[in-house]
Image 1 (tube, one colour):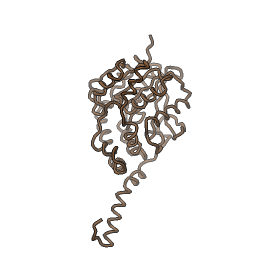
Image 2 (spheres, rainbow, N blue to C red; image 1 turned 45 degrees about the vertical axis):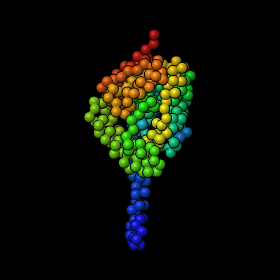
Image 3 (cartoon, rainbow, N blue to C red; image 1 turned 30 degrees about the horizontal axis):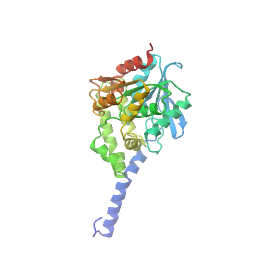
Image 4 (cartoon, rainbow, N blue to C red; image 1 turned 60 degrees about the vertical axis):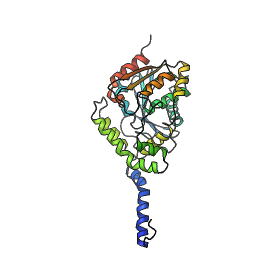
Length: 313
């Protein structure tokens, strides 16, 4: 506030500062609240809130659990889920807290937080293993952490462009992650702009999940979504998982990793780091795929997962 401002001027400056400070609060209030009943699927109340989930395929069959990534909810897996179900798998797809039809608790979104959500969901659904866990992007971090924590129940681990080994972060996101308060303010107000650009880019791709770009765009208009994304960036996507992959390698757990050769989010250097941590992991690069490979290359992913997890000698 200028030192020589008049009384009226001080009032104006105070009002401006207050409006700036309250802008994120207003932005969140005008966004849509989560609607648990929207779209297909079921809901269950877990310890930290409602989780939206869907089953695909026969009641009896090898269980495959799909864990989605940072910004796109479980709909990103729709084509993969249908494809695996057609091959006889019993597929569970669910929304992480803060996304899709699941609640938005204010807990720090650490790896342990998401592992607990999955653990409670599987317990509620009476799934005891053995299971195959598939993790995409940030879901790869969660799936890897889950496999390490409950290795006696995880039969196979599949990673699709997994985070946790190398991850490209733009300047804006980096500032939001590292600067308290200011980062929160920036993410809530301006974070949706970048994510909506990503949704527009998805419209240009050949997708096997109809309407996925609309789903991606719609997430940015839901209350609690941007704070959830920021919390995951700060807590679930920090640190390195190389030691966890090395520990899993020592257990002999079969691991399959698929990478996009044109991925601008998870660089291929992550593939080399996984090979170093777990030389036994089977790794496949889809040369033309970007980071959206679950919806752009679903057929190839289904074929590889089926060969890895469903075909028995």
